[in-house]
Amino acid sequence: MKKDIPQSNKILFAPSWRSSVVKGKEGNNWKIDEEKLQKSEYFKGILEMCQSEYFKVFLDSNNLQLDIQLHPIINSVMWRKFEELSTERINFVQTAEELNSYLIFITDFSSFVFDAVYYKKPILYFIPDYDYFLCGNHSYSKLDLDIENGFGEFSQDVESLIRGINKIKNNNYKPLDKFKQRMDVFYNFEENTTENIYNEFRKNSFKLN
Image (cartoon, rainbow, N blue to C red):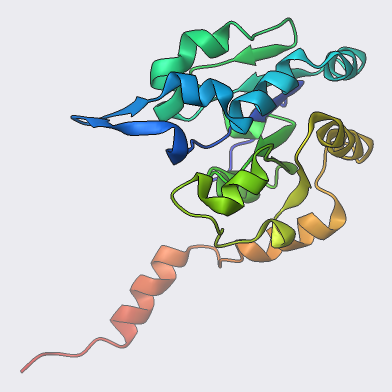
């Protein structure tokens, strides 16, 4: 059930992980190649986001905060390194707040996006290493739902991401019409679905001999 939660002035960025920076596993834990990660376009994109003066001014002027929640595989070994990138307006968090409290949800190709669709949150895709992703930078190089048919605008750099945020701000932090239409039909379930299924089974039940 959807929760009515007062909205803050926060944006959430929740990127996925990258198999190309993983060495392997030790028991149940993934081992990250820290040097490779820090040289990756993935890391450089997050670095650009945190160090962009243009982004800082934009957040300041609109009284916005950005929470960044890293994927647990990355977070487990690189938390301290990323936490050093926190600024007055950008904060790396171990656990995000309720998704419904954020004004905008930003991701790359995390399945977390479907929670945002459920809550009808404005969505943006930020994938600074998109070309590398297409070439096999992850364990797959094609999405089940292409970015072109996704639920928000797509950016590979911070300046275009800011333009996307600004469009949503100018739309009173609501999804743009074409993306709202996609959200409206994506979870098009009847109310009391479980009860309806149960009643159908009862109505069509039969006895075994």
